[in-house]
Image (cartoon, rainbow, N blue to C red; front, side, top):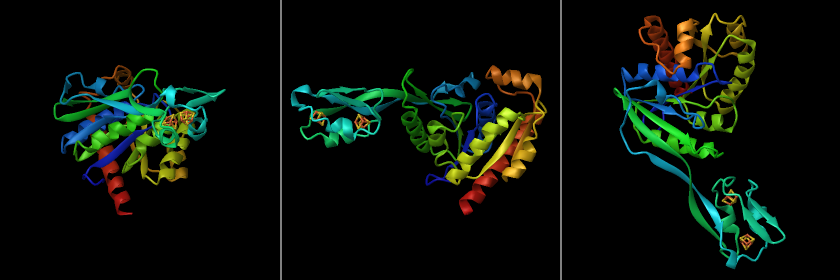
Length: 294
Ligand code: SF4
Ligand code: SF4
């Protein structure tokens, strides 16, 4: 639980297509039945969690996410090249005393501006994404979305997390980007518990191993939800046992469930699912509490 009293559950997966977003949406619905809950879409390159809630209505203003990028004031530049040598991200090229700034590669750290001895670099805001908030019958939906073609997903993820923290919900369910790269790492950072969604296939197990490593590396307690249980024949439960990670839920494979995930529609009128999701949420919250007490 963070300073604002919010328990943060991150829903992640080692690869795409496991049903991660569907599980996140249902966990948020289950949470909203008993406590103020926000579903936070941190899959900012392709956010689709809000799409599950066709009746959602905006409940606040959209907020732009921007970074301060340097702009060259040529008249002041001596061509010393210090800014290019300072940039850790290779966003400034110095060729023959001529500076070229790739603003799309800039992370907005400001190091070059501070280093320039002649104040020839001026910071200017550049939009990289936006956050938007809506309400779906008492469940808050917060979405981070990157500008198409931009590569600074982590900036948008951090801005979305910050806005989520200001929502003062009791439960925050994060839909994280798939995989274990930088965006996924940022998305799980600060979570109290990670729900790893995987399918019983060898391919999924391979990616799950990496995702478990990510959770362990951050010291965040985690549990596995086996989605499409019965679809593949890989022994994912045995794998989890060997890895020392609990299986906190199984969602049996049914064609109509798989189809609703693909169409971003909820598993309505499926009481078995409601019960299973409630159990998963209870186990995740218990795991988060144990983690807090460690
Ligand atoms: S550090 Fe300043 S003066 Fe030197 S090349 Fe960069 S912008 Fe020009
Ligand atoms: S602000 Fe940081 S990332 Fe951007 S160009 Fe300057 S040093 Fe590089």
